[in-house]
Length: 623
Ligand SMILES: Cc1ncc(C[n+]2csc(CCOP(=O)(O)OP(=O)(O)O)c2C)c(N)n1
Image 1 (tube, rainbow, N blue to C red):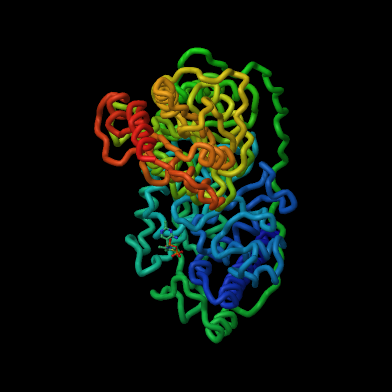
Image 2 (cartoon, rainbow, N blue to C red; image 1 turned 30 degrees about the horizontal axis):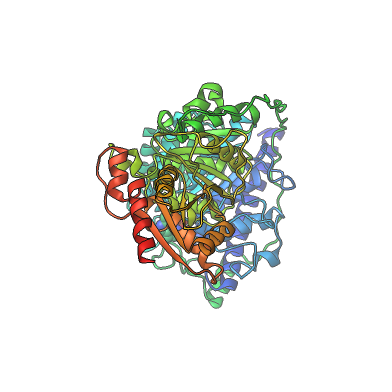
């Protein structure tokens, strides 16, 4: 050996020692925090301690003082229950202190049982813990990095039992299709899940073959051999495909009393066991590491907004088409706006955006979970991200939406083909539960425009909204009832007809039925007030309470199931003050629709003008 070789050799030994020591520290800290908390997942953390140590020490290029920088690499802990390991790594890099580490799972602590972003935890950008979601989030981050011409990479740690989730493979196929190379999934093959052995045990080849079949570069390693881990991470960065590293590990590694033993998932070690475990791991350490620096990155110069006029309508147009045309207009006004499609862009009209900004349009195919996961990843890197599909199919990704709310993500969603009004295609295509589902999401805004001009204003407003926002669009053309310059504040409503005999409350398609009904009632001498609750959440409680107080009869008409929709939003608003008297009648879809024309189906559901008129007449006679 010449001198240079000896130096190399020494350096490798030093590094190997550091990685092993750091892994032991991460294991010890995972045990300390969970034992202190009295709950958590120490064994799931221990299996991935070496994988995480090598990553944070030498591969995850990140500027801790600028955690949101697009230049940084990203780490997504898809197996979110291994949160103690993540927090131990954050302590090792100096992001959090030991006191915070030991506050794990305590009320008010920034470090919850599963990772969730918060003001005191800017290094965690997305919420995880519902398994199977990390790969799609990682894909979205990698797509955003490519758009920003950043040299960043995304590292996603997934569990082996977690990999039974179809969403893992959906995202993998999409990553290969999008020719993403800056994405590495590390699969912690520890053989055990929550209640026992996984489907494939330690058969790494099953996962390697699958990953390859999905178009990925794949390798299998011993997940406790730090040199092998380092080599695999290097190989991942050198390949021009996404990489899956299948790392054979032991659950509870390093603690002989629990290692590779069934029955220890999600259990904190009792204090005496923790003490023995920490001793076996070599005791406490206080290693701090500085992660490698990201590659220099310069933001591309922002393009000035085109300043083009917003779309404006005088003729009937479907709100779904107005949505697409609004996105096309916004493409020229907002650089960071991206759109994701679930292979229905010619139905939702996101294709209008694609024609003018193809580089910011992402086809996620019929993989709604991947679409919303990727959207979550993109917004974490600063993109203003819209995603659209049929409202009915968004339910496929409801868990991703729910998790994004936990992560305080800003998702702009559009669900088209609302209600029985889609007609002939039948109930499999009808969004009939979407308002209920989206209303239940924390912090969500739910919008339901009735015409093209309202759609333009509301979709433009969504681009500036935080948290989850949802616009519900209609398949068929509806007349223009508003002037293009009309404002639509979030939380507001429009009173389109005055009247104190009855209040008709509607949104979207049923607003038009209500207007027809109001005209017919007027001919009978009944003055019907018509309210457009285009903002279903937050809803205009003041206008609704005034309508109830002044008319004594509120009839809510909606093309949605009776449960949880606009009718319930109105009842919630009235109940919130507790003092309102009067009656509320809900007209909505009760039974299972079939095919038919939109008119036939609205008549069948009892939500058309005839039904409204009949309901009001009966109610007023009875009243
Ligand atoms: C979608 C979903 N289903 C179920 C759970 C409950 N759960 C948490 S951890 C776990 C087992 C995970 O096993 P694995 O992926 O192998 O990770 P390990 O802890 O073994 O590293 C389960 C079923 C969950 N968090 N998310």
